[in-house]
Length: 455
Image (tube, rainbow, N blue to C red; front, side, top):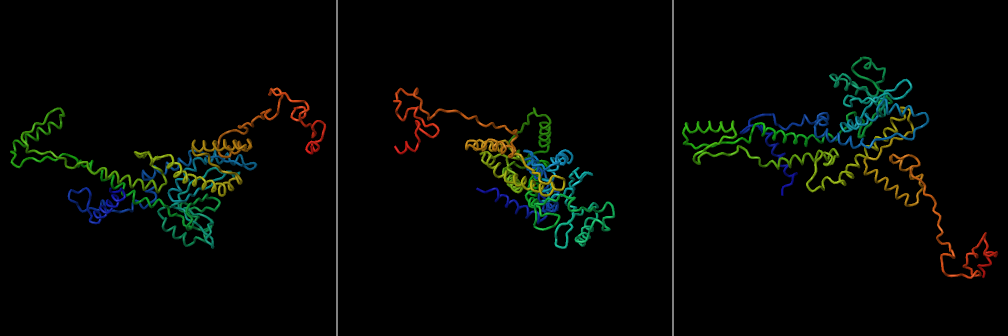
């Protein structure tokens, strides 16, 4: 059986052969045209790729998956309540984080201007377009500042000038005196987050570019299917006998048109000379759909999104199981959460009066919450300290108050203590097993334990 990958490779060879000859898919016999020549220029821009409907949907799913559990800021130092409130209520960090995730998906880098008020508290974290950000370096190649190009028309010239003076530019340089062209930022004024540290370039080598080829073929197949329906390639072709008289031909056409206008009229035909056949049959569409599924699966794999998240389910159900969703997808989600957590704690918090505070993510979903609660029950079954288990639940993001778990009350038991009333056997009072012979204060019946042991 031919696999989807083999069909995809065969289709790619076919497209390449047609485009090299300059044939248009819309021509009956093939007309010379460049309209369908394989040209990936339109797909080599991250802006085009990130805005493609499939990629945009996958990115949105990923961002929602990271954010849906929520987060919390704990371990606040003294006098940091107002700084925390400013971050959450004024700067609205809950809206900034999705923007950070979008920018990281787009070019593996995020630039946010930290805007503060007179008291040093954050007022806003404004996203700056990384495409027009240039890095300033010191003599050893270490990052020391940023330049944002505002006049995009002069972007090439300004980039060249900045590149020549990358180690010498300061906020007092002449090029920053011309308003509306470039803006200088100190290192502490920009929250710079990067997932690509291969070099110090501004434009990271985003893996998003690898989506250019599958997206191109997806659009090509969909355009081809649309062209077939738009041009009515499935209309009926009628072959009439060669010797058919003009009068009969005109009567037949009139009857045919009348039957098309009025669906309740019959079309009467005489003889067996007229043949009706579709101009094109809907055969081979399954192969086209398999090709679409193959290229879509490549997009899902590269964006780390499982099919079930995009409502694509398999007939068997194995391809969209909880195991695939959780253990394949969660690794990527947890890494993104851990990465942002450390960037906030080490980069952002010290600049806005929250040094020492902890940024923590809540459990991703109810399944993870149940796993945490099950683990707490196991701790309690091991006779763990109830107060510590309660604190651990809160630390893991379970919304329970302090003292939620109560300590078990001690249960008084007489197990192991002999009572004469429990038995019908009557013991002699002089017997060592009689309750009256029970040792008291280290002796037994007025004698020391050492004496009893010697006897």
